[in-house]
Every structure is written in structure tokens, then in C-alpha cells.
Amino acid sequence: MDDLPQDESAEDLELSLEDRVRDARHYAQRLERELRLFSRIVEALEAGRFISSTDRIKEYRELSRFQDTYEVLLRMMGHELRHHTTGFYYLQPREMSQAQLPQRERMAAAAIFSLIEHLCDKGLPIESMITHEEPILIDDLGAMFSQCHDRLTRLGLGSVESFIDNGIRRLVDVGVMNERRLSQDKVAYTLGLPAYFYLDICRNLAEQHQQQLEAQERGEDYSYSDRSVNELADDFLNTQPDEDDETPE
Image (spheres, rainbow, N blue to C red):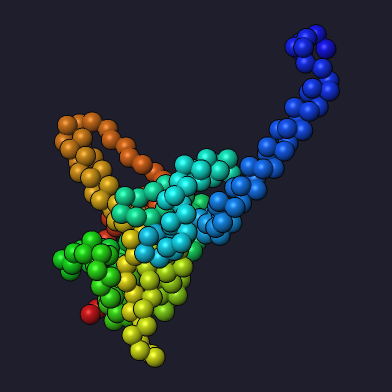
């Protein structure tokens, strides 16, 4: 073969290939030895879960220690690993329209957006509630549901029970909220660090709407992100219920 180096025989090439195979096996064994929680971490991330410093502590420590390695490996698998400064990891959501977002994901997003809206309307410090794990009681969730009844119903959350089962508990599953049992028959929920993921969306949306208003005043066009969760947040938070559909207190 004319294009091969003259001093490299077929035997040398065979040995070189064996060396590469041996090196690859050695690397795979070392990877398995060093990244002991690799399978568990990838499974959790691919299921849409957040890995935080206060929830999945062992997984978070391994991700922090080998962040560069995990970023490369997950990129090879078609994912983009993200780290939030407050202390949690997640996979960059795939670009899709709101209509393509799985129903359960839409319900969970609607639940957290209604929760954020309700807490803001009550003037409660959301960041402090996250930091200090302030409990949110079932009665509080009932009030939130009443406030957003019309919008939640359009997303398939037509009762307090479905709001909790399909919205709040999905948020618990992915690590955005935590369930705390106060007694045998009394449960409360707290916001975990990953709640910042959705809080950031709300803040960015408020900023984008302000920029949109300023652009309109100048007679300019303005467009902003149409990622699925952002789109759902925009639709949910900026759609006011009809007066006839409001749930009486």
C-alpha cells in the first residue's frame, strides 16, 4: 500500500492495533473504577432528574469531581450537561415546541409555575423558602390550585388531587421539590435547589417582556426564546382566567 509509511510493516500495524485495543480496554476499566456511579447518574439525568448537593449527595460529589469527564461522555451520548451555580446538575432540555413536550412534563411545569406565581403574589421570599426548606402544606397547595384553576384545568389538572398526583409529585420525582411527612397522615412539601431552574425561567421571561414593551414603544420588533418550557411558562403565567371561570374563595 503506497500511502503507508515505508518503515511500518503489516506486523507493526497489527501490533499497533493490539496496543490501541489494549489501551481502550484499560481506559474502560479505569473509567468503571473511577466513575462508580456512572450508570446511576446517567439513568437519573436521562429520566429528567436534577442531581443536587442536598438531595443526591453521592452522585453530586462524583459529578463535581469528574465534571469535565462527564461532560465529554454525555456529549458523546448526545446530551449537554449543565451545572447551576446554586448547586445542581441537569441535562440541557432538548429544543422542542410546547406541543411536543410530554404531558406529564407539561403538568409538572404548570405546577411549579403556579406555585411560583402564588408565592410571589403572597409576597413570600421564594429564595429564602428554597434555602431554609420552608414547608408548603396541602392547604397551601389547595389555595394555589384555586388561584390557577382555569389554566391548570386546561392542562389536565382539573382537581387538587390531580394537581398533587400529576404535578407536585412529579416535581418530587425529579428533585425540584421534596416531600416531608409531618405525622402519619400529614404531609408537607419543600422546594429543592433545582427550583431555581424554573425560577430563572420566570425571571428571564419578566425581563424579556420588559424588553418587548420597550421595543414596541420604539416601534421595533422583538422576539424571544420559544423553547418548550419557556413557551409554556409564557402561556401559563400571562394568561389571565376569565372572570366567569374564577373559583370563588
